[in-house]
Length: 196
Image (cartoon, rainbow, N blue to C red; front, top):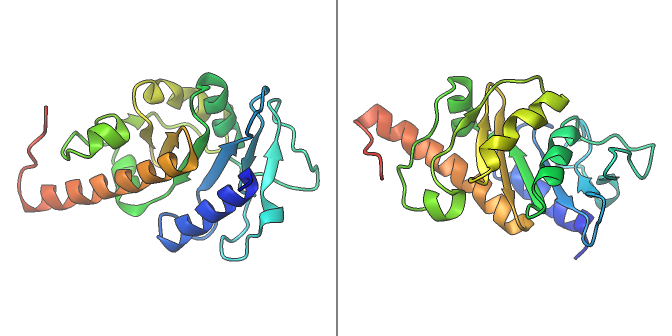
């Protein structure tokens, strides 16, 4: 399966699982064998339910689209920054999943409350500082939060999850939302116990 097919399949799944709303969020995958950090990313402002393989945008390591008539997701700079910094990351899933994003809005970290968080996320989920969407600064500010984790929250924005392949990145994005949901319910029903 080629990268654009993988990105499209993951994007449709993201939408169907309600980890995004409307045209929010985005998904990318590093071009296999790329030596210049080229990657494929979902397009800007295109509904997921009508998106087709030909809509997926290829961008080179300088941020130039292969097909100049295509408009990539506004968050392409964030994806490129991650690919440049971390050669082990080959796929990125950015969601606006409701429970996790609610913690991003209140700027609360999600502590290590579930045994799955350690193997699938690397531990607790931190909130990276706020920077404007689509900015170079947003890409730069989240890099330290991915040094020993594969996911973090973006203040007042959403989530980012990464992996060595799309399956790993996508699974991490699901666990971020699951942990956020469970943490929310635990906080409303009692006092969550944090794992060490």
